[in-house]
Image (tube, rainbow, N blue to C red):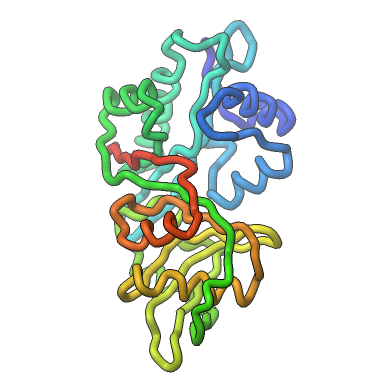
Length: 269
């Protein structure tokens, strides 16, 4: 087996490997060249830091990663690891991770983080064997923005993210941390500020990344109403929220559905 950098493959080959390795994943993961490139950029994954494995010259596995500095910590995140089905049970995932840890040490990485779907027991056991420990259990919900008949809630967009970046907790998942393509807004009812929200928006989809509301169970429908007033009945996702968050039952009662639960993990390098 040979381990190499992801950028040793062409983009076409990278996407083909990803799609083949993730073809039977627990949630849909297939991507086009455009969506793969956009994902790498938005999640700050590095084609040079990411790795592939080849068996007899054939691409067999892929692992995506990137590094960022948070406060005094250089953190790495693994944003996807999969082996092409016919090459499984050969220890390839273990070898890719061990090689990645060497690269992390060379880069001065302090900590590696990842998320693994709760039902993916083989992956969970592998990460635990290699020294990863659980931080939180996270949930991913999807639904549709609706008119809840709640009045007087409105959003004010924030232009300077620095004050809000300073508020981010250490355990906040990598994908939910404020980045250039995210938006931040404070939420108001009448003249009272109730908190703030970090989110992503496209023509057809709203993704809530950080919900920071006073008395969130009583205010969450007002927040959704404010978004509905702005964007209409588009799809809405709550991404990587801690399962114990008190506002989640309100969303489930209003038609949101669970897509997946994940275990957020960390390992000191």
